[in-house]
Amino acid sequence: MDPESGRDETGNLGVRAGGIAAVSREPLKAAEEIDGRGLVLAPGFIDPHIHEESVEGEKPGEFRFPRQAAACALAAGNTTILGGNCGESNYPVGKYLIRLEKEALSINCFTLVGSTVLRRTLGIGDYDAASPAQIARMKDMALEAMDEGALGVSFGLQYCPGTGFAEVLALCEAVRERGAFFAVHMRYDTPPRAVETVEEVIAAARVTGAALQISHYAANVYGVSDHGNNLEITSRLIENSGADIGADMYPYDTWATCIRSAVFDQGFEDFNFGVRDLEIISGPLAGRYCTPELFEELRHASTDTNVACHNAIPIKDLETVYRLPFVCLGSDAIMSIGSGGVKKGHPRAAGSSARFLREFVREKRLLSLMDGLRKLTLLPATRLGLGKKGRIREGCDADLCLFDPETITDNAGYGIETCALPPSGIKAVICGGRVAYIR
Ligand SMILES: [Zn+2]
Image (tube, rainbow, N blue to C red; front, side, top):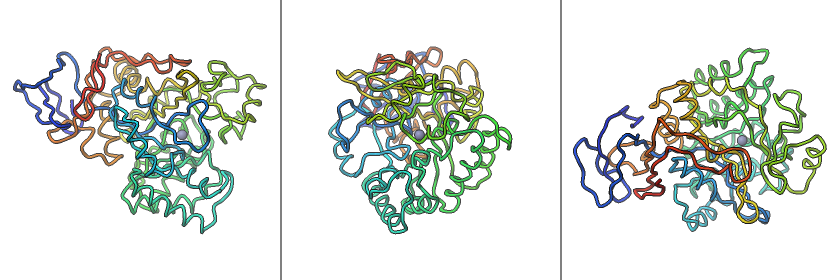
């Protein structure tokens, strides 16, 4: 099944030297063969939104790698992941990419450069405004990072309240100059402010002409406000903007974030959840739920803790968002590695692709399998500027996923180790022409 051509037929695919050499109804001969009868062969899934994981005992300033995120992604059918999201990335990008190469991860890993990191490099506090000279410097740093290999710039406006519109525009100018894109974790995440928060990023895209990817769209935009249904209103604004705007979303109603972050500066009044819906997903307390006392303690602790915020997003808003043609899947993987290599985190790192295909495509029939696959392959490939990925065509990269659409099921849950459980129904993943995963 190829979402670019719409081709959905039975046949054979031949791979040579990392590329797709033949797509044919005729038999092909090869040194190594995989029997895909009864299964679907699709382009390898592309996840445009992951986070590099923290490792217990790491020193501040050390590079973070997506080792666990890559392992989870591969077993979930992905052949490409993009890190450096929500304003947080490794920096300098060139040095990081050289180190990442040595990690020899089994899938393709790319990064954005995070604006929050550029600010911190210049000594600007997250709540402080940047001066015009600092903004000019950040623009140069962003250009340099893209020249070193970053696919674009990410913002975490909510995490960095000091980021002003002039600063956003300067970095978007850099993005436009390089033909890249900017990804934004928007400034607000409560229903009353949903429309203004989307208007801000649309304005940045329109003024500068830079392509925009809205991160975890329905995590920031859900529910109703005085304007009406927030997703209906903002999706119309996006579609009528005339700008190149896409979005990604993970198929869970549960957020994950850092407990010390600005997300919790405003209290819980406008959220759908309370402090007791917070489940700790990193560090020694992983698996416990917050009490008001524990929440206060962790808010002021010297190291930050990841929490899953249950019941944050109405399920019907997830259904709405996946019907929108400009929305693709993005897992927003957040993992951490405890002592002895114990895996902690939100199940979306391991479960997103299979959960989407199971719940939203197979069970609820919100979209056809081909349209579902488009959100996992062609759409993110186009956003990332990867013209030879996300497609099944001779001459494209041999990044492929072989799976059973009737049985594919997510198995990851909340909790230590279970968060990384691979889905069922994925038979093989081919990356760069090599069998990277087979069951
Ligand atoms: Zn985010």
